[in-house]
Image (cartoon, rainbow, N blue to C red):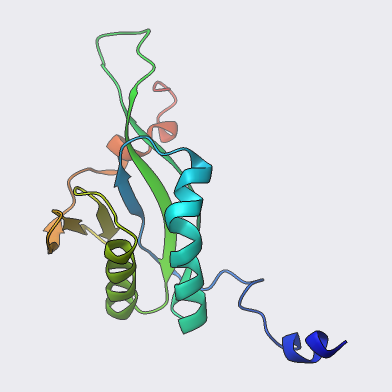
Length: 145
């Protein structure tokens, strides 16, 4: 019963705060459990504890050979869905957490029409997005896989 008093009114674990999409793209093919255990749970915890947003779920971004109908695509990125309440502060937290967690070079944090790219030593901030929705979300086109 003591824990119930502490948790009364605590909703951070039940809500999905954040309305500014900031997807995180990790290069390579990470199993969903590996992605969660290595990155998502820590980023989500930090965003929620600071009231800056949430992270969870995701998918894979595949590259397809348009000339090969049997091509199943190669995984280019494993994506984490992240949303923040304050863009600059949320991006700072996400970038710092990713580095602390050992993100690979080529990791991207996207927002608006821009992205921040980790080269293994530093973040390159505010670059133009390297891909558009058609490249990263093939399910939106019924003619694609």
